[in-house]
Amino acid sequence: MNVLPVGLAGLLFEVDDLATAEALHAEIRHRYDEGRLTGVVEIVPAARTVLVTTDRHPSALNALARDLQEWQPTKSDRPDGCLVEITVLYDGPDLAAVAELTGLTTKEVADRHADADFHIAFCGFSPGFAYIAGLPRELHVPRRTTPRTSVPSGSVALAGEFTAVYPRPSPGGWQIIGRTSTRMWDLGRESPALVSAGDRVRFVPCRSLP
Image (cartoon, rainbow, N blue to C red):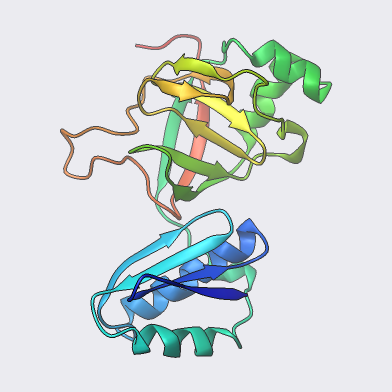
């Protein structure tokens, strides 16, 4: 892995792929939970990186970087979080386009999306926006050529190896295959974000939304 300094008290760990980034995040988080990392402020996973920041002298992070040079990821490194079910009405404006891109019928697209076992890889882009991994390879499709200036809240969409639910209206270029009434971000909750990295997700098809 490649290790880069971030400011005076942070390190960015760069790896080759999402699976390694997830395993690395789980390993660092495990060491933090065991009390082996002191002064850590944030551990932030992304698609190919993990950022660790501290409120203390960076020497502790440098020691972590040296130690992790010998670390090798395993499939068991990513813990199973809580299971969140999201009800989806598969009637998105890009459903037919995704079917054409994949060579599937619209029903097959919906069925394979609903049958998959997903997990939250990381969060970003906007509050409550989770990059959800586990998308079957046959559903990997590119972003739209022309992004929309406004994607409705609750839109269920695909882009590359991820699926996601738009937590609020925003511009976006993902392929929308459905919609949900589940609130991914709600300031009225004790924890506004419905999910966090490591949580599992199941999409449950429905005929109508409340």
